[in-house]
Length: 111
Length: 117
Image 1 (cartoon, chains in turn green, cyan):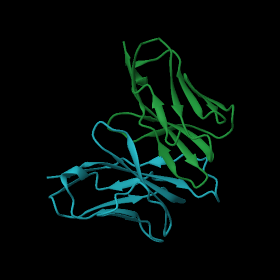
Image 2 (image 1 turned 180 degrees about the vertical axis):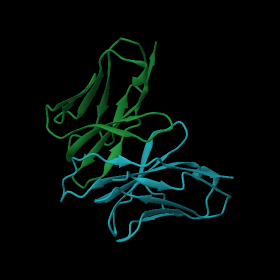
Image 3 (image 1 turned 60 degrees about the vertical axis):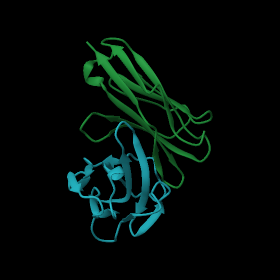
């Protein structure tokens, strides 16, 4: 993998359901993996930064895991709420410091 | 500590004019990134700068686009002879210097929405 890839591109979730989605990134020259939350008409806000293989981070109902050896990260949302509706971006930092984003996963939570 | 400031928030230019987009990073941040968001697309990397240096400009179109981050003052993204296809939202992000430590989050500005008419 040469670029950052996110899947699915979009998903619809019923309020109260849990969901997860994937970010794939180059496993070589890895330095850090970032997750951002981006709401319409706002600027992206950082959720997590992870650097170590096996890292797990949690913020409220949102958590993320990291596998640097195989080059993927999962973001989990537990008990989705309408306010979780946003585009979730992951970004990969290489050792040169370049921060490269995936296209995002758009999450729509319906009541 | 003010966040990343971008101005103007909205910019309208006629075809052939120049557009200058400014980004003032957070205090103490010496890394700046510029991204472009085209309609219905995500954030596309354009350029990564540190003070007075362009580190990576692999995402910049070869012509008409340039960026700088001088020792003093904001980072500037300059688009010469704009065309309709340049219409997009341009986001800037900054992160602190870390002596090679890039595991800190980047903070985004509100973006500049460029419309070419």
